[in-house]
Length: 200
Length: 200
Image 1 (cartoon, each protein chain N blue to C red):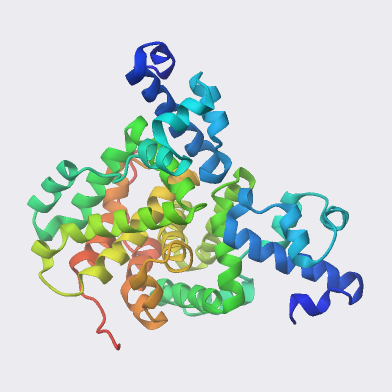
Image 2: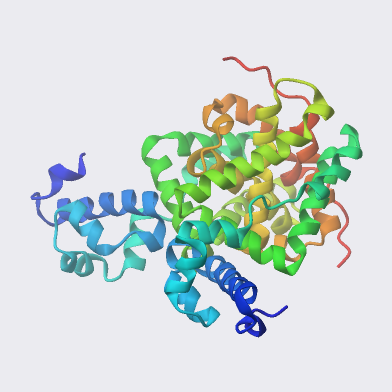
């Protein structure tokens, strides 16, 4: 469904056209750089209509970016793999979602915008750590879950940035299989491997 | 040296006051959100003076953030450790630079700004991959250096974001020793460990 064909298709089409325009703008310019005026122009509507539908730029951002980034139906099969393959399975599931064109755009929008905006940053942080943490209890059963989820999140965030936002050539060009083979074991180690004793 | 004491200390003091104000603004608001007007106000100077000293916001950004982030004297001892401890040694050297308050602020400024600005993103990408790549030839001697450097860069970028920008609690609270123990072996594997054969 092209955003442009929805312009005159009633409320639902207009709302979707605004969301599509917002996703592109947030992805290309970040939260601060994307203006409601420019989004409205892209969608072919009056800025007042954007405020009517979404109330604020912040609410428009949340609606367009669509937290959380990874739906639970993607993650359920990851847990089903068991703890022996958790890292590679999680990485493959994430890459399959992200590599779909639409979700790649959504992810770039999320990451770029989140880093220029406190609320977005908090949502990004909470959604990633909570998502990974949700995979862990049945897999490890230990109380170091938050640290493991956070260590894994750091690799996940860095890979997402490098492949979809910053555009590090080797990470953009790598196939999913190559990335899973290269980084899956690292993620596995963070999630269920040995961790140092904590001195605090 | 406080930025505010330098205001009337002549050209050098004024220039430094502008740089200090710019670093704080870029760190807190990102590249797009930080205005030359606000930076000039913070530094107690006329915006025209900022343009006189730095020419453009872009040049001010480069001067304030100070690419590259990691000076070579920090990295030389890392290489001296030899390939057996390259990952943990690199991670420790980076964390020691970043954990210094001033450089933590510089890093946050760099990362937040880079993601809202194409030129900054290119500089960030090139400086990290080139830095890591510079460590590799003598250590591995193979032609998979760019892929290894890029994989390592993804973990380095993700950790820097999680600890200094996004503020993932477990990564903020962890000691350097804990992070080196937890992620050093992963970095080691990316830098000199086994990699999958490339199918392209």
